[in-house]
Structure formats: C-alpha cells, structure tokens
Image 1: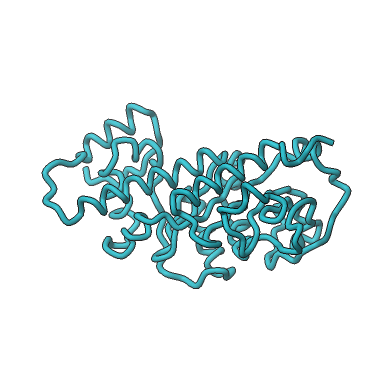
Image 2: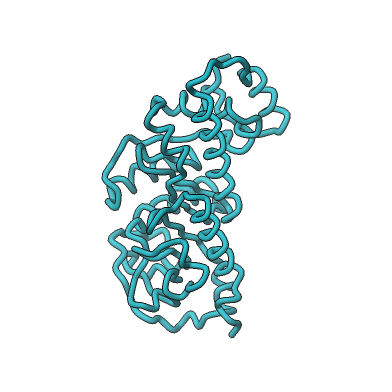
Length: 271
C-alpha cells in the first residue's frame, strides 16, 4: 500500500484547511469539509476491508451507500489539520444500512466526523442529483460575507445582484447565483434538509448570520466559489457607505455571461 499521508486527497485537504484558516474563514473549530473520493484511488492507500470502527451518522443516506468520503473532524481546528491529519481528518464509507459510517482511516484520537455531517450528506445527495461530478461540500464563515448578512437584505435576487455588481468575474464564476436561508439552528437535520433543497438550485447557499455552504467538482473549484463571493462581499463592505459613482450595469453583466457562455439566472437581472 502507498502511504496515505502522501495521497493527493489528503494533501489537498491539508492545504485547503490551512489556507481557509489563514484567511480567517474558519476560526477555532468553525467550518467543515466533506469530499467524495474515488474508491479505486482510495484502494491504493487503504485496505477497504479493514474497518477500524463504526459511527452512527444521524441520517439515512441510502443514495450514498458504499460511497467513501474524507471529512474534517468534530471539534477540530483547521489550523491543526496540516500538521496532524490523522487526528483531524477521517475517511469514512457509508455502510449498507445507510445510517452508519465505517471508519477506514483517521480520527485516531477517538474522535469522529463533523457534527454537520448529516447536512453535508444531504447536500451531496442533492448536488449529485443535479451534477454527478459534484464531489465537495465546504462550509465556512468568511468574514465579509458574514458581515454583509447584517447590512443587506437577505433576498436571493437582491443579494446575488449586489455581488454580481462588485466584480466583473462574479456572474461568470457563480452564474446560478446564491441561495439564502434565514438564521436557523445549526447542527440539526432541519437546516440540512433546507440547505439540500436549495442545493438543487444553487451551488452556494448562505446560512443567515452564520456562514456559507459551497458545492463543486473539486476542492479548488468549491474554494474558488466561496473565495469569489467573499471578495465581492469585501468590496461591498468597503464601499456600501460611500456614494456609488460607477457600477457594472445589468446589460454589461448579460454581455459578460453570454460571451463566456454560462447559464446565468436571467431573472436575477433587471433588464
């Protein structure tokens, strides 16, 4: 077997979590990531018949039976993942009953996956039903995106439109816009179900006064989606109190989207 610590998916998780912590998106043990892995790739590093222990997931995910994920641990700090991946990350497989996770590697100190795992699994099911290449769910607390929640209407069209106005690339990067939930109690199946419903329409879902969920085909793509929203939110927060002299017009956003051939939310523009 190859060394699991040299596996690309482990190294990617280490690099991504370190970067998110450095950016201030995931204070303390805030934020979590789940990444659907390719079974054949994992088999190069682990004996898939060797289950360390089983852990109830708190959610029945029949659609994901047999699927393997690498997931950040509950109570774990993103800043520690890079130096100690075996305690801060785990590789799990959804067991045949759909409600149990089989631990294949990680959580070496006796820990387990993030408390938000049910919400992640629900979002994976939702995104896979729309795009079977979507493999990553990231939840984080980007500072400016969160700040914007307190001073901007939490209306999907208006919030998306404002973000699109802030950077030329925005309508190209997330043409499907941003879904928004009101404040809800985190760590519950209820917020997971509501998020998953939004995930059928959006790859980005804001949890009001809490943070953001992003979905994508890779860690890079998903990180990039959140990064672009955060940059736009930062520009908004830097300029919202100042007179607006210039802006990207709706007809220009339409021109951008059509030039780059993206399927954008036409109902989110005022044309």
